[in-house]
Amino acid sequence: MSKKETIDFQPLLKMKELLKKSLLSLEEEKLDELGEMGAVQAFEVSYELAWKTLQKFLAKEGKETRSPRETFRLAAQFGYLDNPQIWFRFGEERNLTTHTYREDVLTELLNLLSPFVKELEQLIKNLEEKSKEINNLPFFVELVSWRHMRAEFKELIRKDLVLISPSTPSASAHYSSTSSPSLSPYSKPH
Image 1 (cartoon, one colour):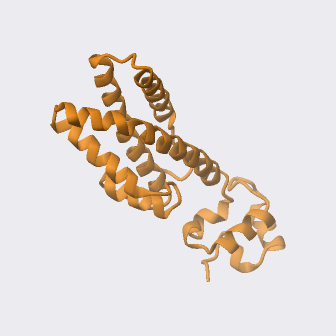
Image 2 (spheres, helix red, strand yellow):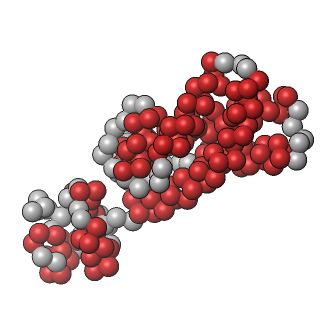
């Protein structure tokens, strides 16, 4: 995936809305057995979409992951999640629902829907913020490993530099006249 390619998380938004409707119906006791099974399916799909969407965002950060657990752990390190432990719990429940069909498992999962929706909403908010951050980085930041810079330096860059597209002909003139040599898009970081 290229750094400039945007990540579509609309399917995740749609599933969140579906889950919220299911949760509302569940709270109002309007779900029959078939509706409960639909809510479980929506949970499973939402969980899968969440970790696979995070996997794409982490790839843009230069990190490859292979499993949901690894993805949620790294996502927390990169600020996409506050608490990976709860996502590990959601993963355990998701695994139970795909391999067992006991009523106690169904009841436990249905009780977990409310916290799941809350965490999913926070994740989507974080993804929206990170998406803006990733897509608005100055050109040279892609070349100097943005994720390894100290926070103070990132803030200085955000405040003081004008965003210039890599295709702007005057980019090299701008950098050589307005920034120190260490900030040049063509030099290695110190």
